[in-house]
Length: 396
Image (cartoon, rainbow, N blue to C red; front, side):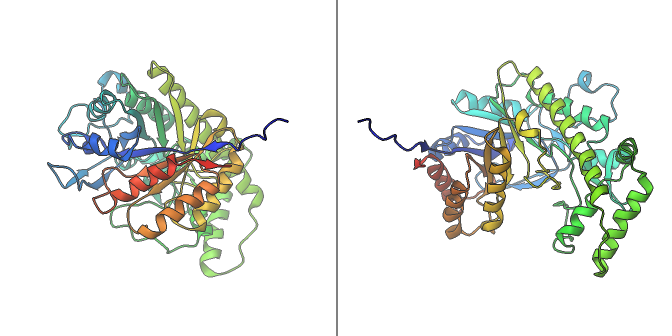
């Protein structure tokens, strides 16, 4: 009689995230990564405006990135004749911050993923307002570049190619690979909790010139659409019954998803043309197709284009585990499912372990850990806990 089959052994991969300035000038960074047991680090190669703490760094306590930037040399020949072009990160004392950080990690035997933020660039949205997202009230979101614009898609593809050019990286992580919406962690943001999720969804519908033209091509008269969406917002704010916009919104969503798909494919093609070796593609996205932001809504074809989809799971509790279950169901084995988790407050120390176990039970394949540079000594044990949790064998 044959022995019964043994249950499959499942382990999760763990990936740590960091900025170039976390690596550069800190000889202990690599030692900390090794002690954690990580083998892959995602380093920002193109990133948005931020002010970041550096609690472990021996030379500084804060880094202020004044604007979105490419953390590589900005080559004139790659951007000649274009309105949309990145700037150098002159707040980092290095001509090639990502390139040199990646070199240090690969020399130490670690894998590097290029963390690329695509459509989040306030400077460009302010300089070229015609390519920024516009809501139904005519209010622009300058931090959000609308992927319905061919110029934005071309910018994103070139940015991605330049971000990885001549760098030995095994993966790319694509953030903001789609449309951003009304929610934005901006300077002294004062919008959190003001509007219900249904209103946020409506206020995140882009009504820019490119989107209106796309609606027109799909048979919708743009002006009535804008007025209908605006009316739905007004109704929701006043508590009046909302009109049924199902058919209109189905077309609006399909137009957005076409732009998202076109953006993603052009970026992936550009990356693969720029990197000599096979490269794994990791996409930040949410299973809710209407989601906007750094992790925009997943489209039906996205899992066939990428290797891993990473969903936002920062909040401990059922919201994240429900989202992960939805992601796993949507992916249906076509791509790995990653959970983006943070060790930073307000995550409770006692809540973190149960959160990781719940995500594993929900079907998570990978843990993406935020953040190797921002986490101080009091939070580093949580990073270690996550890596141990990911590497611990589970019988299924």
